[in-house]
Every structure is written in C-alpha cells, then in structure tokens.
Length: 503
Image 1 (cartoon, rainbow, N blue to C red):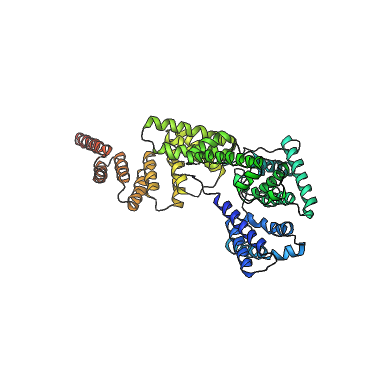
Image 2 (image 1 turned 30 degrees about the vertical axis):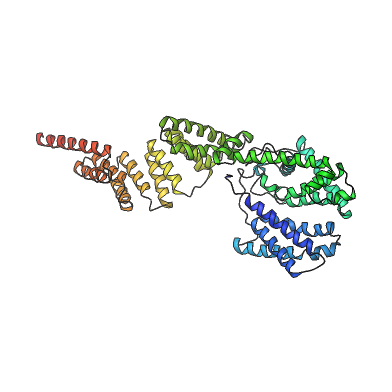
C-alpha cells in the first residue's frame, strides 16, 4: 500500500485538465452549450485540485490552433470556457484567502534557492533543475520523495549541468516558436511541457518547493507527445499503418515499434512496482530515500523522527530502545549539520537526548530549537521544561513550563511537573500551590498526589505526606514508591517525635 497521498492533487488536476481539453476539441466548430459547460466544469475542477492548472489557459487555444487548424482569433474565442473557469477560480480564491496570492515567507528547508547568493545563481540553478526533471522523465532513477535543502546545491552559469540545460531548453524553445506556426506536433509538445511546468519551475518566481517529482504529472504529457513524434521519425509509417487502432494491429504492421513500446512499458512498470515497495510506510520510504538524497536535511529529520516516535518511544526493551535512540540521533544530528537553523530537527534531538537521560544535550538542542523558531505548542515547552528540571536548572524549568501553560492552561501535566521542580528547588509553598492546581484539573492523577506527598515530606509535614501518599495508593495500589515513602514518613515522624520528647 502506498503511504503518501500528496500527489493526488496533481493527478486529479491532470485528469480534469485533459477532460476539459477533450470536450473543447470535440466541440470545436459545433458550439454546443453542453460541451461549453463540461469544459468549464472540468477545468474548474482542475484548478480547485491544483492551481498550477492555470497554465492550461494558454494550452487550450494552442491545442485548437495546432490540431483543429483554427486561426488565432477563433482558437482564443473558442477557449472561452477556460477563461471563464479561471476567472471564477480567482474570485473563489480571493474570497477564501482574502486575496489572489497567499504569500508567506519561503524557508530554506522548503526551497534552497532562497539561499542563492545572487539572482543569476538562483535562476541558473532553477534551469539546472529543469534539466533534472527532463532526465527523470527519460530515466527515472533514482527517485526521491524530497529534494529540499541542501540536496541540490546552488550552481552558477559556469556549471556544466547549467550550461547544458540552458543550451538545450533555449534551442527547444527556439524550435517550438519557429515551428508552431506550421502547426507542428513536436513544437506543440515542447510548448506544452514548458508552459505546464513554468509555474513550478522557480524560474519566474519562487514557490514553496525547490523540486518535486509530482510536478511532472501534467508536463509529462508534453514529453510523451514529443516522444511519440520522434518515434514516428525513427519508425516510418505508411498511410495504412497510421490507421492502426489497436496494439495488435501496431504489432502486426510494425514489429520494431511494438518492441520499443513493449520495452518501455516493461521497464517503467518494473520501476513503478519496485518504487511502490519503498512507499509501504514511512520507515521503508525514509530508509531508502536517505540513501538517494543523503544531503536532504528534511529526509534526515524525517527519518530520525520516525525512528524516535514510531519505534524508540514505543520500545519496552531498554537495550533496544537505546539502540534506536542512538540511530535516531545520528540522523537528526546530520539534519542540523546540513541546516543549522532546522528548529524541528533540534526539537526532536532534544526529545531523543531527554529519553537517553542526557539532559545537558537535551537542553542544548531545545535552546537551539527556540533560537530558530517561535514555538506555539505546549508539548514543546513541557519537554524543554522537564529537560531543564532534570538538568537542575530549576529557574528555567519553571519559566518554560509557565510558557507551556500559556498555550494549554488546563493541562494538569504542566502543573504537576512544575510542582516536582519547585519541590526540588525547595520552594515547597509554590510546589503545593501548583500541585493543587494539577489535582483540581485531574483528580485521578496518581503522580500529582504522589508528588504532593513528596513535597510535604521534604517540608517535614509527614502527616500530610502520608495522607497524599495514601491517596496515590488509592488510585494505584501497586505504587511501590508510595508504599516505601509512607514507611519512610512514619519512621521520620517517629524519630521526630522522639527528638521532641528528649529536647
């Protein structure tokens, strides 16, 4: 079973776009209202699936011009369903988002091009990535679910890969523009590819991703058109061969073409099946792609986090847990070495070190996370507060746990932890106050009653300590620590009474 569903928006956008074009082409010249409605509907569905389908607005009249011999004016006017749907989509988008654009700061972890030293380097690298897309269409190996910082490094114009990409696409564009007036299918395929990939290419403006294989769904149709056109040049057709409508007919009439098609189908099917095996679940995918994209900070973080959360934190065997924690730390450390402002990776490093009882390193990484990001969830501050407390930095522990309470004021765990570290800090009255709050929020909290007992015991009030230890036992009769501490409290109470009698 494939684990990720992110690409479904691209697939739906592709299918709806093709349906919209289909009804546009079959209706050309007939002007049926039903075809107009269907074209408009399917294109709107394509846009609502993925906004990059907007490029089909340019493809639609081009399709009529090339394949229906329409003049420019007729092609544009007949493409009105696409203009209508695009306008409607823009209005809907503006109403939902409060504007046509939804601009937010683009972070390096999402698009490494924002770290380019200058405009030329940024665009040169973007054109190089365009070349990488083309290579993946020709030879899809190796594949990776992520190409973010810093798997693709910034390149200048002098880079050989950039030069080849610039020369190739410059010639392809020149050829397409020169021959589109002749209604060339090859020119159409080139323009289809370049137009449909333009919005995600990072050439005209930066987007939230430096590169993603899913961006090739729609452009791949243009590539296929070019490929078929070139095949017809390699494998010559006679008039009757062009009329073949089934694979059997193609095989009988032109075995060399059939062999090529069969070979491509077998190889690409094999690649699809083997790749799907890696998508079985998060861990299988990450374990594979950390090999193919070893310089991706996101993959290192994702793999380390998956090991930590899905395996280490659930492991009951302590020796196995330590092995998994070490494995997680290796990946997360590599992630932050690639991107030293990767706050989420620092956060999970802090969690991993906390689980290893290495509280100094836990605190170090939690602090690094806080320097790079303003966290707005209680969980982060609870974990950091506990790490500070375990590291005997009680003032920072209380401060951090209070920050957690700002985001989740009804979380009993926060006040329970505050009580523990106030007690260890020997601020008994403050400990009692927050532990009462914890019990108020969760009257069934075994640990809150137990910690209240500890606080009273440390204050020398053994009667009250015993009361709360017994309440803890009432909720959990197997609480050995509470039983032991009742015994200790009784003993100390007896000793204290004897001392008072003597003196």
